[in-house]
Length: 134
Image 1 (cartoon, helix red, strand yellow):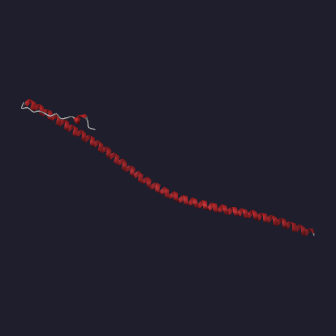
Image 2 (spheres, helix red, strand yellow):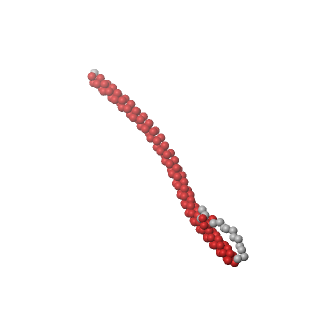
Image 3 (cartoon, one colour):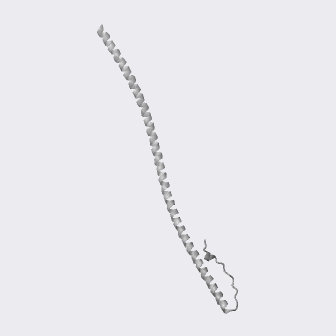
């Protein structure tokens, strides 16, 4: 925003042949000129201040964009690693399931074998007793 000093209205002057009036008008014009130069300098200072602020924002923007690029690359690598690890975990799950199923069948077969072995052992003992009894 412009300062009040820079928005002063210029008053029109009525010049008369009187040299005192002419001198006064010249002084007034010089005052207006000085004020105008001062206002222009103030505007330039404000522009330079704004320019420094823009440069700082652009620098921060560039840093954030670089950080974002780095984080995006990291995220991509992490996603790739996750996909590989999840695939490996799925393979482990499959192997564990198959192994547990095979182990369960082995246990059932062992149980059946033990039952058959006991029955045959009882039959053999009966035959042995029967043959000793005669």
